[in-house]
Length: 266
Image 1: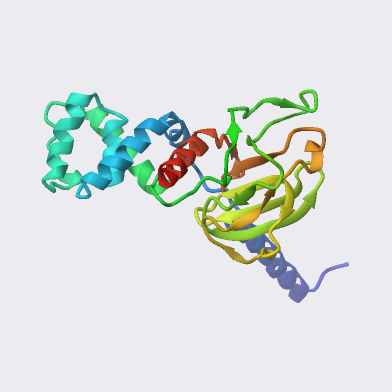
Image 2 (image 1 turned 45 degrees about the vertical axis):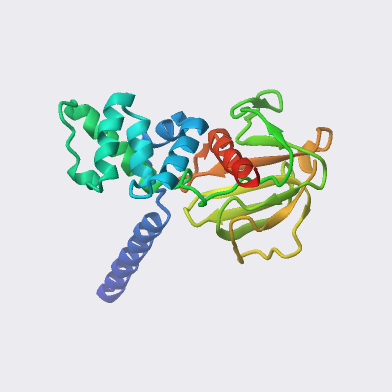
């Protein structure tokens, strides 16, 4: 049986529409690419160096914070000082006299500055420590869980039940309530595009509503041991999932944010 031409045209048009819809969906849901050098560099920065550059920026506000950290984290002291002296007299970073530094070294400093400008975890007052009060934590990212069935994708911060937990940055509440592993948990989609996961809470702040705005330092809930942490000491499981779906180690960032918190309270 021959299919009428008009039905053939309609079928072709419908197929094209389906194809366009699939392409559009893939574009909208495509995970953003993150360069392989970003997190190795950010994780290599010591809290002591970040704190030093924060203090230097306060005493020499003409030098941008990302200029300071990019230079100090990449170059020997002698070379770093020569460049910083230029910045102190307000020579722009783009116009620095690099003297005899190798071209590859200059490109590395410029790349590190670009990373610090784009990924703002270490910028003063952008983020805060999630636990209000005494706490201790160690680097357990990647440790085996459930007999090796899965890996630990976060950092556990230990303190007494009921210790206040706050949002480390501004964003929107994306998840709220109970799940099997996390127990009482809150998920915040940060303004930076990352997903921040607060789990094993004793209670969730009654002020939170799914989809609402939350600001840096606002209450998330209180520390507990709900979910699969029922038999463990009270702690917050804190996780960071990048916009591309990759979970990264929060430990280096928490160390820096804690040092800022201690500095503000001293």
